[in-house]
Image 1: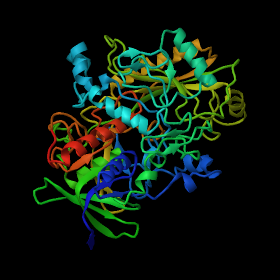
Image 2 (image 1 turned 60 degrees about the vertical axis):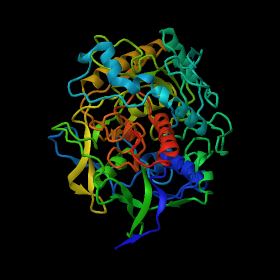
Image 3 (image 1 turned 180 degrees about the horizontal axis):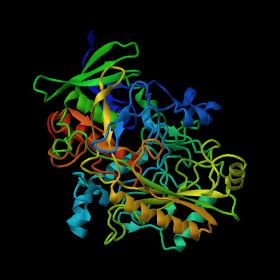
Image 4 (image 1 turned 180 degrees about the vertical axis):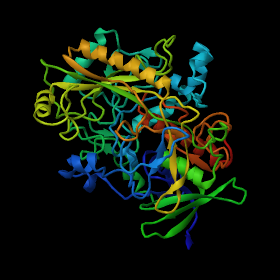
Amino acid sequence: MTTKLKPVDVVTVGVGLTGTILAKELADSGLKVVGLERGGWRDTHPDFDMPHAHDELRYARRHELMQDLSRETLTFRNAIGDTALPMRQMGSFLPGEGVGGAAVHWNGVTWRFLPWDFETRSRTLARYGAGQLAEDCTSQDWGVTYDELEPHFDRFEYLYGICGKAGNLKGQIQPGGNPFEGPRSRDYPNPPMKTSHVSAIYGKAARELGYHPFPAPSANMTRPYTNPYGVTLGACVYCGYCERFGCEMGAKASPQTTVLPVLMKNPNYELRTLANVIKVNLDFDRKRATGVTYVDSRGREFEQPADLVLLTSYVFNNVRLMLLSGIGKPYDPAANTGVVGRNYAYQTNGNVTAFFEDKVFNQFMGAGALSMMIDDIDGDNFDHTGLGFIGGGWIGAASSGARPIDFHPVPSGTPRWGSEWKKAVSRYYNRAFGITTHGACQSYRGNCFDLDPTYRDAYGLPLLRMTFDFRQNEYRMSDYMTKKAAEIAKAAGASRMNVNPRTGKYSIVPYQSTHNTGGAVMGADPKTSAVNKYLQSWDVPNVFVIGASAFPQNGGYNPTGTVGALTFHALEAIKTRYLKQPGPLA
């Protein structure tokens, strides 16, 4: 039996990066807001206290902060004709669970997507013609431009205290920054991170080859910082335990270190943990959401009525809830009709490991975003004529902390175990570093989400089914970028190198990135998008779907900064327009 609760103004489904910002701003405006989080509560103290904060086995191998796949997972196949099987253990990506979500265990690299990224299709057609896009490519413009989002990028960067060096201030190129970035209204709120020995060697080699190296934009604080909400973050100590870990210093920007300390004191806000939302409830006409239904840790079912429903969970859950609730028309790849589940995209990564005989690096010290990068091979920053692909990405060398279980580089041809492997690990542990190529991924007709007809979760509901594989565009792009990375490694003096471009079918098993996008994409046409430019459902106007699920395709960057900008963009529309006159905004 379902227990019906007292109505509230707003309910957020998920209490991570997007859900905390929206809840704080709307509660401050006087609205009653309930945040529903399927995981538990956690905070810097006591959850990330030393010494267990640096337990690599617990967090990096056994995935303490990640989704419980025994209760809910997804199924995967490479192509429509394949049989999808459940993902039984963490592999290619690591969705978070619990208060703060994936913004707790991220590494901190924080980009603004390029102006080109928001107008990918129209700009590609204008410069190269229709032949530059594959016939089954469904990438499209976002319905919003970089210039429209710039104030929201700025606001997110100042909230999360991002550290970096501006490369384009109001159209004026600045030395030491990224000259390819879109114009920004002011510099980062904090200076960039220290330059490691790896960064210095990589930067010098890249510069000698004519590239424009700059320090990665980072959410790992370079100094104590108090954000506009009055919350103070600590300074990074370069311990090397960022990605897959919480931060014991309170120095990595997350909901815990930027928003929750003030949000939890607001009497208009109520947080309910271990509350798994299973459906958005719709009225008889299916044109308005009346609230949500969730199940608590004891298996009890509750209905939470609300005037405004904000889907603020991870990509997979946002899309799955829309499909389970009947919000928008499900995508049919055979007919190429429908919108919910359309345009899933991922990230196209490659790497080069450079080995040295005459250089030694301090591998113990580092941070998630301590890196030197180039952006010359990203977006449309270079001429793609005759290359057979569009897009690109950043190429960078990171000093993220060489943890003992995960880091043991050896040259190709080394035995995988035994005395020779041990000698190689001992020799090259502090004489090697990786160069990452972090590439874009276009959307295609066959890459999508739907509900699996066979497998169900712990509540008896269909699992989300992912269908995905890379295409020739991504393989060619990865090969091109990885060759450039190898040239930089050679210029840096590497004696040997392992060169690994993206090849073969996509596999869901080895970790690659948690940068999943699409499925509830934004746009100007309801025939090809699930939400409008304000992330409002075309079909149910009091439902907003906030997150990387809105990306029509993936750029070459880590998505967090753009997710933050979209959050503030939607927030402004809700506060200044929707609340004054509820209804469609576009």
